[in-house]
Image (tube, rainbow, N blue to C red; front, side, top):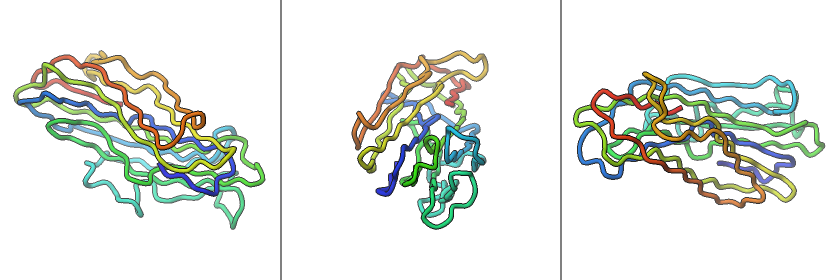
Length: 225
């Protein structure tokens, strides 16, 4: 997560779905990415009616996602009213990319280095925080051999950056599920809401959450969203 040394007010980075399913004891079987979509939303002020900017499309594999410098949501700067920022006035900048990971050990998502949001507001023109939200939905199908008996639904990420004195940031994990899309049954307990506040937390910061998944046979679906 990128942070700017010139931020004068609060920032918010929202990870709507940044998850992995980890299979540390997988000796056979396989996984295939069936489908996936992403929507990235940049809200310059979450406490006021502003014109958000978005980018959306089919979820690429991680090796094919745009690299830093281009991004799916390319570097965009918005004024506190949602228009084009001018000069050194109040503004929010954001960029980000997300891709799918599918290996013998992991299915899930990864963010491109530098994905994040900043807010510059020396005169307190923004009513609230700037927000960059990733809404991600992907489905994998279990192939020959099945999966199990020990599998995990696992979420982990490391945040880094700089938060100037008297400023703040937060990461929100909201309604993250590992489930069967056929009958809408959860494979593990969802993360319904988790907020990480900086401060009192400091950077860098690593978050992990792990729970066991059931044994899955050939043709089973795993949806993470």
